[in-house]
Image (cartoon, rainbow, N blue to C red):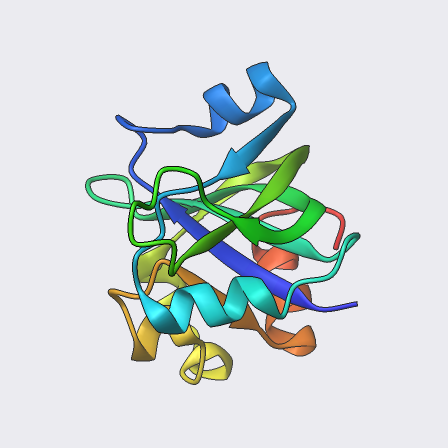
Length: 137
């Protein structure tokens, strides 16, 4: 199993929206590196749901429900998407400041490539961030 992080602006698509819909398309990604990350995802992989912009915090866990397929919103036909399913919220959201303040997380893509919208998370980082959020890994 692999682990991921999905960034979303809460005003565009929030954790509450994800929970309400259960399973939803993760579309609109137009960055090649983020898209390549989605191509590597397998059904059953888990990901952090991260509120970007003003909140900047991990708020929940999603599961890959459908592997990479073409994104019909992309007129260039170069980019795709995956479907994600809400699994559980974090008991305590973990902020970007907390992640940056934890020396064991200095290599997390969220710190190194802050603008990337979909990124891999190493196993040990997954466990640590879940523990920080008082949430089952």
